[in-house]
Image 1 (cartoon, rainbow, N blue to C red):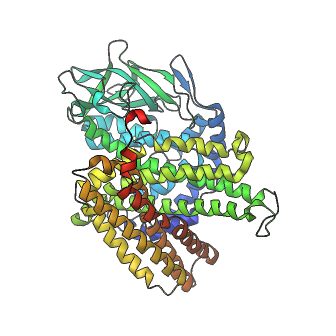
Image 2 (cartoon, helix red, strand yellow):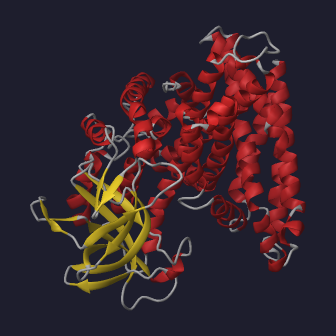
Image 3 (cartoon, one colour):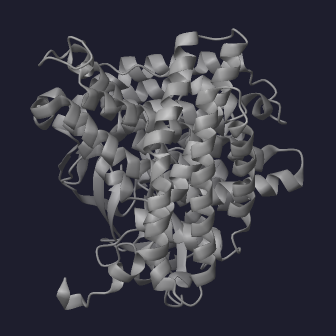
Length: 593
């Protein structure tokens, strides 16, 4: 079983080159955040991830969370790890200082969150949902709700959940049945929810549930949904915990992976109604919840990156130590087999492109929230909106292939649980499903983010990427010039796919939807390739200046070149699928399948 090692050097290099760390730190409110401080934070986070979270990852997978009579106990070691996690300040690190957080840039917290997701995917979900709930309450809750609930949630003493899905509803939120009846200064909430991550557990003293429900006079459909805050234990005026609220975990799901994360079925109002408090305006529940969902979608994309990094490290360690057969390259271990090297290089190149994409999106979030110029904030926010489905969809889509290749590198030993390779594949499988499936992300991308605005933001990004590709084509470094040539061709494929979607979105929406997932893959591939190219160019410049670790920098160039040769070249085929593939997708009648 390998031990996780945070890729600190690559994290910092990526943050500086594509995340523009220095510019982010120079923004108002971040003046105390320097590159040296960031490096220290990442080093300490890496120690906690490897020393505390990695050792209990396997325990969580084998043992899982345990339910009995409505009570849920986390796997052995999780409660102690969570207490240490909160005591050392990691839980609230990304949150605003106003409620006890550290107020660090999103770019910095993103790199730290990657470590939690690499070492213990199941554990990391508790913090993710809590901070997503914090985001929703801080943006939409009343001042009284903020003061009453956020400090304890940021500190980790209380955790948060998102209660959306119902047994009959799935992703169709228009048919949610949960009800909320006014009663004085609060509401009585009743209904059943499923798939509630960390919906019940013994890590924290209270759990704050955000619940989508309907008021008695609410219209049908999603416009009739409101958002309610329902604590597991009611909170007294002095902040102390009161009686148990009328809500109960009725069971835990038996899942393919993330066994250490309890996925609860929740019942509200079996004894008259759970007390809940309105968050935001009546009927605006979906808009309020989307604040939390967009936060979650970016973080699930980060989960794709995290589990991919861990699966890659695990496969690399095995390949470096496993002796089997005569290798073509002369190595004594299986890393000498060319196809093993191909799988490891594919994984390494994709992981580094995924990291670049996630960090680039995080830096744009920082610009959108704190850049001194309003026009620049607006441009950055538009880019964040465009990138959110790409980060979520493309990173998680890649994670399945990378984790699967990790099993393949192990050969037959990967198919048995003892080596641990299979866990990463099982854990990765949920990431393309929850917080909106890949198709939901893809439809959002081609609909709201491309067609609705006439391709404006994507057009601006294409121009930016094309300028960089033309600059790289003229590079004196042969490897960078070849990468620039591959990028230039891939950009042409993406642009033509965008134009086709814009031309057909109104009269042929089904054809566009049929190619939405290939289009999402095309977008991620090209944007990831662009960012990889920028990393390679920066590495070449540092080598020429005699700066940095020469071995690492040469590997950085080679990895970007591999991405260009093995991944970017798929852009043309993906474009063709988008433009010409819908007829075969849609041609059969239902009874012909």
